[in-house]
Image (tube, helix red, strand yellow):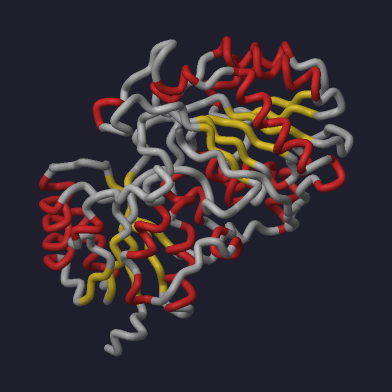
Amino acid sequence: MDMRHPDNILIYRLGSLGDTVVALPCFHLIRRTYPHARITLLTNQPVSAKASLATSILDHSGLCDDSIGYPVGTRSFSQLASIRHSIGQLRPRLLINLAATRGLLSSLRDYLFFRSCGIPEIVGTPFRQQDLSIPRLEDGRYESEALRLTSRLASLGAVNLENRELWSLHLNREERDQAKALLPLNDRPLLAVSLGTKLEVNNWGDQNWKQLLAMLAREMPTAGLVLLGSTDEWDRCEELSRVWSGACVNLCGRTSPRISAAVLEGCGLFIGHDSGPMHLAGAAGIPTLGLFSWYNPPGQWFPGHRNWKFIRALYPRLPAGGWQPQLRMKQTESEGIQLLKPERVCRSALVLWKTFDSKSVVRPGQFAGGSLPQNLPS
């Protein structure tokens, strides 16, 4: 077998919606490098009701042909044997490891397991020192997860993360027609909001959201409000949307991740927590305002590429000494995401909204350009 042209490729990538979106440039690189291979994704089953399967965003994209799912963190001999059997039946000639860095021992364990499955070539295992830590950059940010992943695949080719084509989901006409049917808002400019999060430490709180939506309703009287999220967030969004004086549609639980991406393509601004929908909005190319806690270092999980001027990330001011792991679960009135006040978020949202006015609202398959200052962490 010519290893430069393997017929079967296995990609190992764990996580849910946001983890999959930040890895899109890697999936594009792999498909570009091996256009005729059958690509199978080895991934975890959902870890919570709010976590979407990776395959729900990659299906119909052409970037992946099949998948194998398993319970994350399993140590069951029978389950591991079943995974090994499934991989053996697939007979991949190449494994591409896109798993998040979990330490040298975890990397070695994964490498040996895949070798035991008979896979002759493995690319991307995080063994190097630069793969095992998150470098802090000169401007105070940390290296992005997307850059960390693509650097591990340097042997497959160069990647320009600023190229928006590498973030495309390849949405089709049917998906965009479904999205359009969900938005009976008379072609008015649309503000998309997602209030949900898998982690309570990332939750900005109902009172903050109410204040923000009331402020924006006064400043954007002609705009329609689109609420996105999981089924269990429908009631909460319905209650909070009462402060919105204009047209509103609550799509919580009514859209798949790909249909959500198509809905976002038709919006002029997205505001949300550090979450899957935030990453979808950035990949869709619409003005995106992300609200972050201290759970991750500033910059690691910011959406899209740092040079995209239509994206702004609000990160709370860090205490003396900068980011430390012990800050991850901090959330009080004087800590973490609660330091982001509604007035500040409103100002940032209006800058994005007014720069990308209603005449430049993104429509499916299009992108409205603009120029905005980046919000660097304090």
